[in-house]
Length: 128
Image (cartoon, rainbow, N blue to C red; front, side):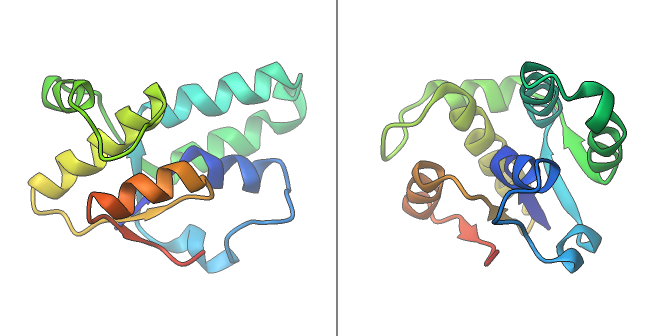
């Protein structure tokens, strides 16, 4: 299963130069419900809701979303091996929760800080 970081989803939605191969979107994708809020905030901030709204809904519909449960929130309060931003801490805590449930998970991200911390936590990275 692939944990979808917001950086990858936004790269796809905004047609950035970097984006995963088409087959990536046929894989089993999972993310924190936080992904939905981050995507809509970014799209709305750019004034793209009318032109990109259907694409955002379709992308979110392809992803299994997990809630920010008390164990996830508690983990996000603990230290990480390197400095992380608040939302990244919540994503990484979500990944660690899935791993604690014995879910095989790899992280797809374009965020170098997230990548560094994930590696330090022993989280496998998806080659995108």
